[in-house]
Image 1 (cartoon, rainbow, N blue to C red):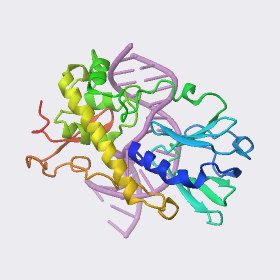
Image 2: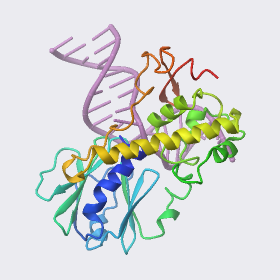
Image 3: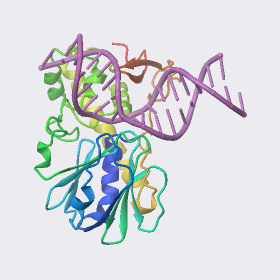
Image 4: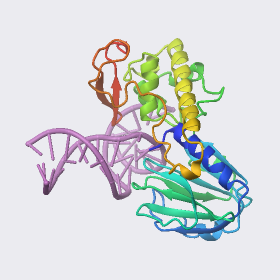
Length: 272
DNA sequence: ACTTCGACCTGTTGGC
DNA sequence: TGCCAACAGGTCGAAG
């Protein structure tokens, strides 16, 4: 489900309920996520206090004195804050109970998510250490993208979805940002000019920021929200609109496959 | 160093 | 209506 804005919204939603709270108990009902949840995660986390929660790309990082647990929502995952007596349902794989009697519940039908533990510096973790810059920081710019893309033949859409290039740009917002910047998704990344990457970086930042902002206003109290940030966010102009008229020019939007992902674009506005 | 492709899962959708 | 194939917002790791 989530792209970066949804993960960020989740972070902001759960943080006030669990920051500085002590973990009292962990219930794992299904260890088989993308990677197995460590069997001793309950032992490891018991009595630890969550000192801080942060995000790196789409990974949520829960820091304790003993180490950090890393949580990824995969494609269909979500987190909710619930009262401890709320019964679990089919895909509710993990409950983390806190001293304030709140439960952080992880639900994930497809089980592409992950829950891992590291006692070490989390930025050195194998899943995090090679990630590209955060898109909403100064390190991410048109100049950066341009430099990074020299010699690359992959389509620009695949390029910006590569987490080693930049984190947090998923299929939906990649398509939307390319539309906004008027760039054909399948152009070879290495062929774009710096000016076009400037425009693209601006649009990526814009769309992510606006989605985060909407997420924040949509969901004021996370504990009552059913934890469904969803695609609340921005009005989508191309994603999921194949065959419908382009909002700029009226041309029917087209769909192609790029890197096994569906890709919608306007054949006129994004023609070269 | 870069690209492509299979893999991990279940639920939903669209075509016949 | 029922069945089955294809597909879904992620992303890693193997192989080319």
